[in-house]
Image 1 (tube, helix red, strand yellow):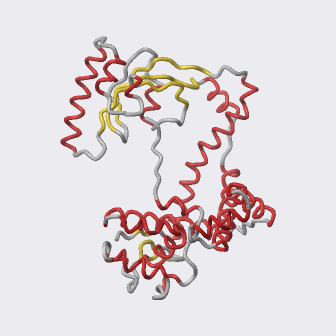
Image 2 (spheres, rainbow, N blue to C red):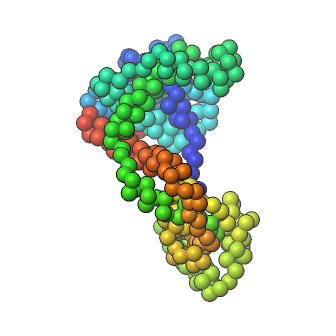
Image 3 (cartoon, rainbow, N blue to C red):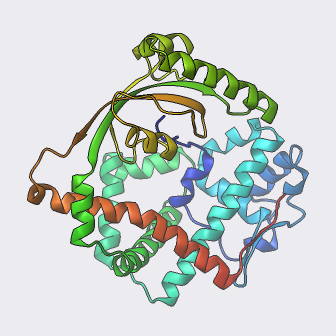
Length: 338
């Protein structure tokens, strides 16, 4: 199964920053965010704008419900009305995850400023011009912001803040990530792609007892598959993966990083032509038949730099997560559930 893509309101965190200084003191009754908070508090009482509830606390700052509401009002613009259609659990999830991402961004900005990270005018202009070009020009960009009820100056300031964080992380990651010739050669010798068929029984949202029953069903089907029954036919009949059902469970030319890890580990380790044991992923229980694997066909020197860059990119995510954990330990980072 391919890695999940999560789409939610808080994806805008990377584009729009935290609330302005003093947000934690409370919202003015004339502020649209105050009225929004009042409406939302009917669903989630802890969002009452007359009160202040801390969601994340560190040595340098705290993130409150007031700041999160102000952030959502600023970042979502006209889409803010969609929040009113959420139930209590959905709203709670949006608010808590937004608070954590706002707090993590503040941690990174503090660390970048401590490291005296700067952004040149040329970098800022280039980033803004990129946004303009995506929108169809400066006027179209300004109109898009206005149509969505978003503030242009706030947007520009947060582009600058994002560049500060980006430059800080680039220096950090470049210093800490090295790749040896041996590692590049080892990756070159690995299988590059694989093709496989699979059968999936979904377990998302199931209870432990329900999962136990699904596992028994999967194991029984595994016996049938290994006895020689047509795997593609079994997949068409039984798999609950809508993305591959009509193709008999087929996924072709799978590259490293395309799929969730347990699935990937199986397709690159089970001998070609054989069927895996039951593989559990976040989606459910899989039976996987490996059809083929291919190595890199291009000469080593032609792809050397490409492989090196991929290894670096793969390591950046892990290095970033470790650095974020270190910052949280350094500054203290306590999450308080609503």
